[in-house]
Image 1: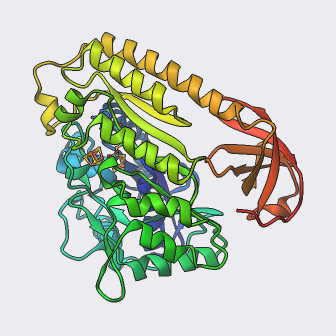
Image 2: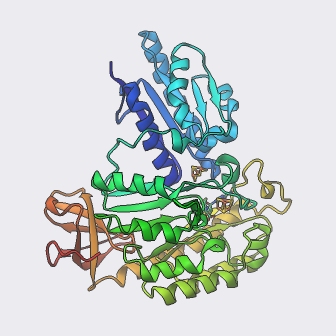
Image 3: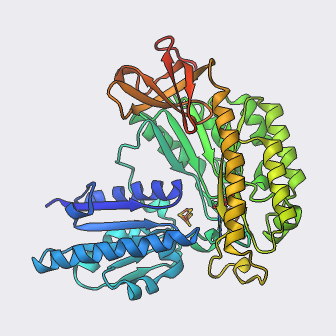
Length: 450
Ligand code: SAH
Ligand code: SF4
Ligand code: F3S
């Protein structure tokens, strides 16, 4: 009998990848993915713990699901609720205590054991809490991916983090840094390309710290991996995210010049433009180090677009520290940037710092920073007008006859075009720029420029 599964994903792209893999692991058990919790027999909430609101969202969602579960219990129809992801790892059994509707709590390293957990929960053994870091790697125990991952696919190559920035939960929720072997990554990439993917984004919490073993047992870098993947027929674009400045090696910077499939877009978070704050954050690099990396990237690939992450209101951040962040943003000039108010995370060192910045101050600084970033993003997009950009078309747009694709710089591009070019890279003359996307018209068909 077919059972139905609904998965809701919060947080980063690695969670999106994990959600797909949980669907894969449950497929042999007869579970089919559906689009609404109302149609499901099992709901998985794949959570994120990076900032406060993420956990709050989980509990309000669980409130709604508890009602649904009660309605189903009234007609004697089983309905399981599982909480996966980083909140599950961080809070464990507390989740089931606070929300008794929850049947399964499972951390990111235990997904391969999901079928056994579902079976136990159906037998009434719940709540089941699995937040250990098992000795076997989930990657070795997951079935081959079955879900269509699209023209533009994600592939996790590295997981976990050993850097312990003082604000961040990731080292605790995802565990120690590990890299998948080269062969496993290449095989998975071949399979998703055979299914129709044309672009792969390599994922990792610290993806450029990748150090997987190759066939000879030697350590391969992310640049080595990109070179190998670029030899796969049909794979026209390679991206990676998110990188840490400390791991931005010469080798990877050169790959941006030498590997044609490697896209000229680098998401390189810096968090702050003040050395004092970077030190308190335990980032392990200075503002000058970061500026030099940006210069080297631009020397290797002059058109490279940069994206950043910033935290405002980290404990002890003064107006002068914040001004230094604005100065750095002005100097680097970002194509895109993500900025957040510092959110104290339980169990992280910075959460206990005495000199917390008042909320009103955080809000003010965030507003100022986001205004600056928006101006830069608009300018970056506006500079595309009148240029011809190679666009990889991924799917139909919202309006009839319209397709959506991406420029090399990750800008969304809307074009009126036939669906037959989905999956192809086609030159587009950019005519209009919006804050978050571009639009234009097709110039030539079936060009194979990447
Ligand atoms: N591994 C990546 C970042 C992963 S978390 C890196 O090292 O850059 C994604 C982003 O969330 C971070 O770059 C940071 O800007 C933000 N973030 C993480 N913890 C936060 C916290 N406690 N408060 C506010 N923002 C945070
Ligand atoms: Fe978090 Fe820092 Fe690790 Fe990034 S490098 S995941 S911010 S601890
Ligand atoms: Fe969130 Fe965990 Fe990703 S905390 S950002 S889901 S690694």
